[in-house]
Length: 155
Image (cartoon, rainbow, N blue to C red; front, side):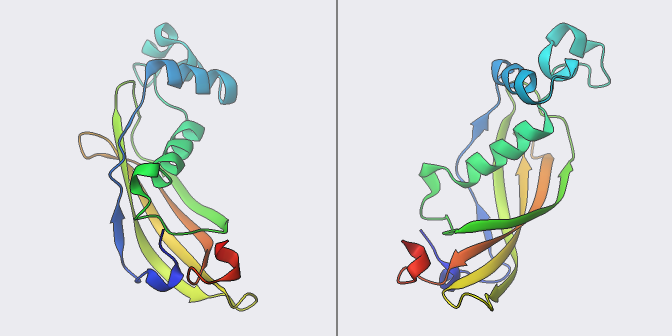
């Protein structure tokens, strides 16, 4: 686990975790959270503008979060107390069954918290891309991070 004091402005972090999207998962998430035919019905999806089943926006946001917090990459993770906000969420290309997704982020801003001296505020730009190297989803996130492992917020 890394902390605010361990991070450098402009740093890029590439996650090793890969996430394979399945048809079953697209249908399950779509049925529960975004019941559009192109998320829930493979036959109807063929007639849509996508020409087949695609993952919903909520699904992609969740996958991006899962990749960024995977057990496999604990040495790359930045300790976070709380997200402060997500901005500029953009979906660039459809994600289809059997696509394999990876993620990276770049630290775009850093500052110490004015109200909580043991914390820093980090802003990063995340990018998720598929097995062809196509960007499928991007977002900016700001979050609170303990300054170091001795911080009262690191516990």
